[in-house]
Structure formats: C-alpha cells, structure tokens
Image (cartoon, rainbow, N blue to C red; front, side, top):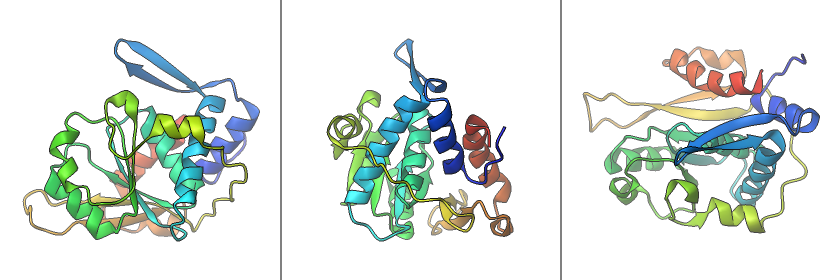
Length: 214
C-alpha cells in the first residue's frame, strides 16, 4: 500500500485507483446511502469549486457545523481541496457559543450538515455564505444538492503540503461560559503537535485517516 503524507493525497489516490470502491456509508431514514470514491469525489470537487468561486483569500477559514456523517468527511476534504482551513464546530453548542467561534475564527463561510436542532443555533450564524445539506433537513443559504447539480467539478487540485494548515479545533472551557474560545492549529507537520489538546485533535483527524487508509 502506498504511503501517504496527507488526507487529501490519500483520497485522490483512491479516487483514481479504486473509483468504484465504497468510501462512505450514511444511514438515513432506515436506509443506507453508499458513496463510492467516484461519487464522493464528484460532490467534493463541485463543493470545492464553489468555495473557490467565493474568491476568499487562500487558507481562509470555513466553518463546519454538523454531527458525524458522510458529508462531514466530504465537506472537510472539499475545504482542503479548495485550499482553505476547516473550523469544525461541536454540533450541540448553543447559538451564543456558535457565534463566538465563528466570530473569533473569522470564518468566511459555513457548511451546515446533520444536526438535531439547528433552529436553536441559527441565530448565532452571522451573515456569511452558507451551504446547507438538504438530505438532513437544513435549507439555509445554498443547498449542497443544488450545487452538485449545477457546478462543474474542480479539475486541477493543488498538492497539499505538510506545512499547510488543515484545521483549527476550538477548545472550550465549559465551566467558564463567557471565556473566548481557544483555537488550536493543526497541520500534518509533526512540528504542530506540540499544542494543548493534541490528543483530541489526533483522535478527530484519525477518523479521516482511517477511512482513507493513510
């Protein structure tokens, strides 16, 4: 098996060499949606193209508000593919906390995925571009499914470097609700591991790496 250095490199390899292999499975309403590497790659590339079309500066911060699901993984890869940095937000936070993270991280846009009660959180989302994933019942901003229908897939994907910032994980002191969020910066460069909360970051990232067999 090839040795990969980044999650994006791994995904692009399997998309090319095993396009019909199952990449993700998503339970939904008693059924299971299967996404092959080819299926997922098509959606990821189209969402990445949309993110690029926003003309944000390179390495802009794109928030991701969702429970664990197939589209969480696809969103994260699309953000990487577009050359931006993901800002994952805990799906159970209230509107005030969501707003703190979005403002503190200077998020340029947000992808809204699988949630239990987004109506109680949406007040915390400022006026930034939104992409909602319709199969989970959300409809704010543009629909993921509409973008998949109308966007052309991104063809030229830049090489992800070890020093590229991939994601920013927010640590939150729950006993001090008014405390501003603390943001941990993470890349695939091992030099970035020497930060508070590294174990938690590694656990989250390993979910992607396990799926992609990094």
